[in-house]
Figure 1 (tube, helix red, strand yellow):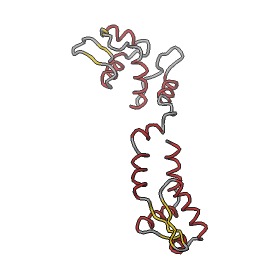
Figure 2 (tube, rainbow, N blue to C red):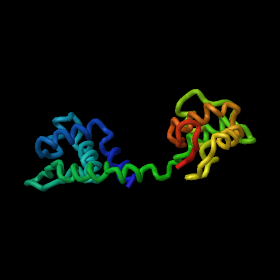
Figure 3 (tube, rainbow, N blue to C red):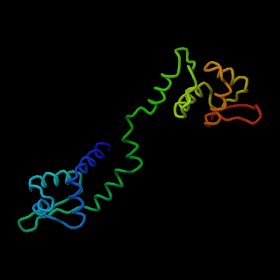
Amino acid sequence: MSDELVNFFKALADSNRLKIVGLLAQQPYSVEELAALLNLKPSTVSHHLAKLAQVGLVSAKTQSYYNVYQLDEKALQSKSQNLFSQQNLAASVVDVDADAYDNKVIKDYVRKDGSLKTIPAQRKKLEAILRYVAKSFEANKRYSEKKVNEILSKYHEDTASLRRELVGSGLMKREGGGGEYWRE
């Protein structure tokens, strides 16, 4: 599907093709009429129309000696709904490494022993580090504050900041007043 999306955008990624689509949205035209309107050679207009026809945006009918082109508005509407659906847009990034940013931040901020060189000040980087640290806690297991501090001390001496940020970011939950901590 991502190839179809790329081809659709390539077909529209030319100012003359956009002008042709705009003109055809108003009424059908022959190649010669479009060439005169756009001050282009008929062969150039034919080339552009072929590109637009490949992605299903225009169609031709023979009238007398001429091929008359028209915009296929229904095809344009259904193609745009289909191509820009949530499912198809999500499929276009299926081969992207979703963890690449986190991995880069971890590489920059974590020593070989797994401890943090420093706690990042930038929010996005801090969130990546917090996701890294949160993996040390089993899901749905309850931890005392003492145990949480013991685990966090392997990462950084400022366990209070890490603990507060883990809770604040929603990566861990806490019962009030020094109660238990857990990761969902």
